[in-house]
Amino acid sequence: DFLPLKCDACGEVFCKDHTRYDDHKCSSAYKKNVQVPVCPLCNAPIPVQKGEIPDIVVGAHMDKDCKYNPAQQKQRIFTNKCLKPGCKRKEMMKVVCEQCGGNFCIKHRHPLDHDCKGSSHPISKA
Image 1 (cartoon, rainbow, N blue to C red):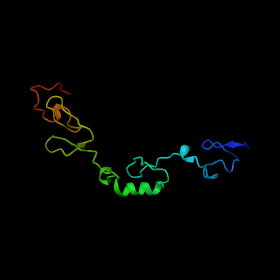
Image 2 (cartoon, rainbow, N blue to C red; image 1 turned 45 degrees about the horizontal axis):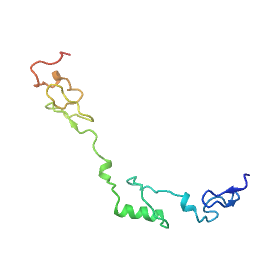
Image 3 (tube, helix red, strand yellow; image 1 turned 45 degrees about the vertical axis):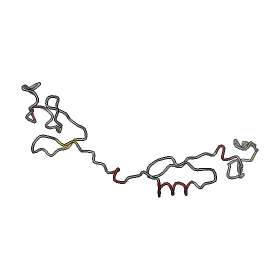
């Protein structure tokens, strides 16, 4: 048992059972016991004034000011459609042909695979 224990907020000395701010009703706890609640939907920190109940303040934020958008959670990842006629594949990232500048899928990325019209001769015959 490490007695006595000194409260880091008010400086009073307590036993191990009463060293927490709530256990001895510390009047200076607001100086040290500072917590900023975070909105569970948008992950934004919500400022709480002294004397306010954090649950009520976060609830009010969720009702009025919350920027959470459920549609944003289901954004499409595969948005880059292949320009080769007849191909319906989409890629996560753009695969741009260096000759014609078109966006293609991995299968049609090479100029010979998409009948490239960019320059008169292909870079390689691979």
